[in-house]
Image (cartoon, rainbow, N blue to C red; front, side, top):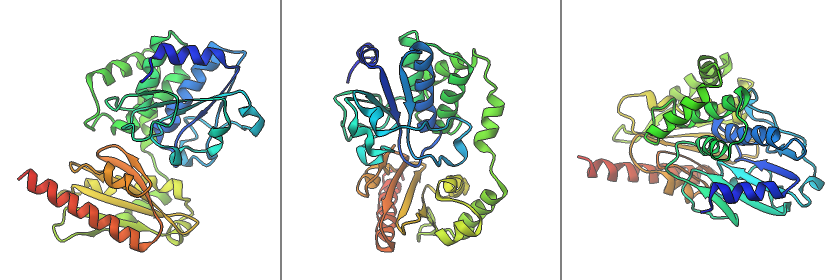
Length: 319
């Protein structure tokens, strides 16, 4: 792993810097990407600094919106990925067109795809790492930057409920609060849903099925159901946490059909480690929260069976 100083030295060398994050972005993906980009723009007004990824970021556009990035922008450019564990998950595969690649992430480093990287799986969020980088290199910080980073941190910590939250996380947040950001407003924006999304949350519970033990749940949401509510696949993220609120459920899947007929798989857990399961299905993530893909119903059935088995083993080990 490289140091912050080494990464900053590389940043100084390039007139164009293009920042990527993962597909199906969450607040940490958008926040870490935006926070770094906005700080570097203030530090280096003569550099061209761009954010790219799929333009449809669902209801996260209040954190940041993507720039128009042309193929020619990559000529001689430095590319930085944030919050992205492996190359299939990098949003906008043109990252390969750049001159040099840097990876900044907090997921387990299962795919060390960049010649320079800073990967800290102990960090609560990629946004926490970016905040540390900004402070270490004495880069600009203001309310706009702090908003993006705070949104990322509370997104990946579940508002400080998850195990990755540390004393250092609160130190970082304390520094962000000194800029005067409105944390209540940020929390409201992350938690509010449209009426259609509220209906989807209800549908996710209504369709939920349990294994024989009652501790593993699965919900599959079809494209037809999304369209009937006027929602796109990215907007379905609001339903992912719904099964976890039910007492007795310790691991669950929310699976959303994509427009091409394949499926986006959301793994969540209150104990069993599920990231290895996700890695086996073109995904990855954290021990208790991961994402993957499924090509058809047969693979969905396989994924559910694997989660049931891992959960059974976890319960036997913790009796």
